[in-house]
Amino acid sequence: MNLFKKVLYFDVETTGLDAGKHGIIQLAALMDIGGEIVDRYSMKFQPHQGAEINLDALKVNETDPEELKTRTTSSDAYREFLRFLDKHINKMDKADKAYPAGYNVAFDIQFLDAWFRHHGSKYGSGSYHNWKALDPLPVLRIWDYKGLVSLPDYKLSTVCKYYGIHHNAHDALSDITATRVILTNMFTDQKL
Image (cartoon, rainbow, N blue to C red; front, side, top):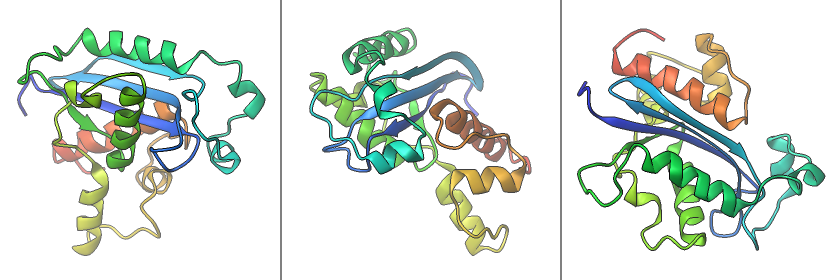
């Protein structure tokens, strides 16, 4: 593994499943440089103005609709997240981008990109990460196909339980921390 590669592990909790109409209400990220976590970001906040709120989605991530109204604004959370990213990535340098990493990370990338654009970013979140996503879910599906693992489903909570990894489902920081454990073990060819 290249000791200078950057990996942006991140996870979002949202007000629904459609990045075009729902919003982020929790974002957690770990900045990994050369295999070491050098910084963390974790914040719960209100969805952006105009975002639809699906009450079933709030039940899944255990968010009280009234408590949600008391959180910091999406704009303030966005500015804080930019400060976090700018400490580690030069968005103007095409060679200085992090690998985006997460569990079923395509979902999170869609929401992150929409959130950036909603807050006025012309280029979305792609100024900070490349498009070479690191995700254990496709690997687990291959292992299932090869008969190396067989689970009733491949939800993160099921995978964590199977491998004995501590995890509080649908908390962004817990989700991304558990995902990093899974991926780190896959990178180093260790058994989970």
